[in-house]
Length: 97
Image (cartoon, rainbow, N blue to C red; front, side, top):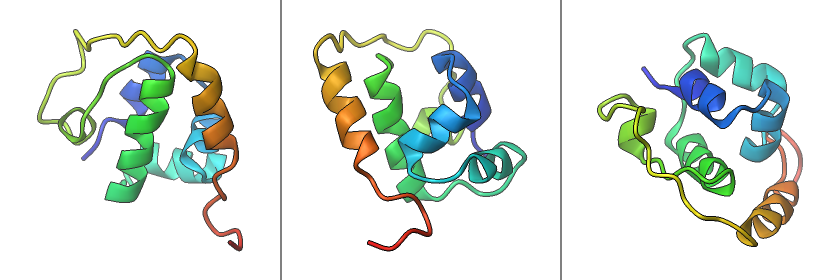
């Protein structure tokens, strides 16, 4: 079990925006939100996406052993543009490298 949907809701982003950050399709995000296992490599990308939106999360937040309320908000400031640029250059799942 994982907390992708509650985290996405906390970030205030769409499935498509999450998919862009994770480097997968919107359909993949939908499958994950309906219970498909979220692989550790996607969880790592989710940590990065959350950081780009100003939230510090860990694997414990994602996989449910640590509650989501009260997450420490990061001050990302100028890092937001860098994050967006890095995430935009990641190949999507299933695309050739």
